[in-house]
Amino acid sequence: ASVLLFLNVWPRGMLAICFVCFLSFVSAGQDFSGYQSDGMLLEAGFISFFFAPPGFRPGLAPNHPPPRASLFLLQWEWFRIYFQSGAVKLLSGDPQWRDFTAMDEYYQNGPLPTWIGWYVQHLPHWFHAATVAATLVMELGLVWMLFLPRRWRILCFFIVTPWQIGVILTANYAFLNYLVLAMGVLLLDDPFLLKVAPRRWKRRLEGRLAKPENPATAPEIGILTFYRGWQTATRVVSSLLLAWVAYATSAQAFWMYTKAPGLMLPVRVLEPFRIANSYGLFAVMTRGRFEIEFQGSNDGQNWAAYPFRYKPQVLDQPPGIYAPYQPRFDWNLWFASLGTWRDYPIVPNAEVRLLGNEKDVLALFAGNPFTQKPPRQIRAVLWQYWFTTLAEKRATGLWWRRQWIGLYAPTLEQGEDGKIRVVEWPSVPTRRGME
Image 1 (tube, rainbow, N blue to C red):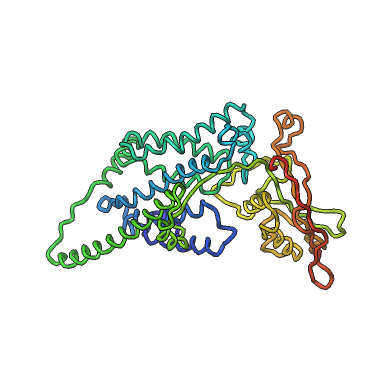
Image 2 (tube, helix red, strand yellow):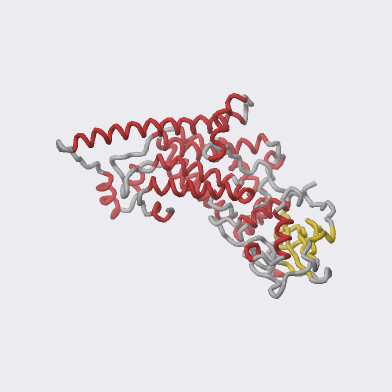
């Protein structure tokens, strides 16, 4: 359906299929689909159903411009992603945003760093402090250009677009930044796009955007009357749904500042569909990078690590660029590393399944150190990771250095009777920089 949507084949039908399928995935995924980016995509997908032109092969649909309400709601979502993210940075009380140190280790401590981010982090502090200031100015100030005349919206596009590209290059946030980047195109209009289009495209685009005149013949008048009646009915339903989404998203924005219970009653009805969300990125910055590593053993003394596909693990392996793909297992382990195993059952559950060499779980790793038979014991340990310095990188070729923290989750053993028992319980690990 997504490929057909890209090819502009029955866009409304394909958007409906994509929305239902992704909503089903998000609902079934539970802990694997609780990310803000999932809500962003569902909200944008739902509104895009009304934004897209009708018909099986609509082309540029000059006779069916998108409803102003759907265009505004997509722009409104774009605005809220920025502005609410800026607001939570100040409302959270995190001192790192106030003392301009929030970006000093940002590139290292995110879910999945990139090799470009490794180099950027080694820039001087004044650069990172400037990016903190620029982030707050852009999220809290510049995005208001959306509500200004046309020239200001175009200027805003050329400010936020390079910014998003920079984020994509220096961190892996799945499809989030690509989605925000795409919605930013809605700051532009057709005359501007025609003006900057290559000359050989202009005539073709102008021809397709010209509205053809199709006067109805006498036999067609009855059909045309029915069609117009159906069109009016669908417009009424669409307007009511879009108005509901507009109210729900606005109510959540105001909820950040005034806790009025009556505001949220219509919002709760839409919660299962994830089409009216509240956003807020990086309210509190992570103060250290911790990694969970699964290890297996046959004697309880010698341990072999299960290699990850995407997470930092091997010290001489550069961090890669994987977005827009999102390895959700690796992402969940990053969140788990900041908490305790009791709050993240994904870790002990993975241990149990590794004791059985279950194929579905092993497929999440880059390899299996126990190909002949499952290990007798499995444990999950915790490391703290840092980027190496420029000098260390030149001397050793390593991108990372790490330090042992301790046991993260219970060490499990499967007996000859098939029962699983706990061999060792973890103590509370001390995370440097998180005290």
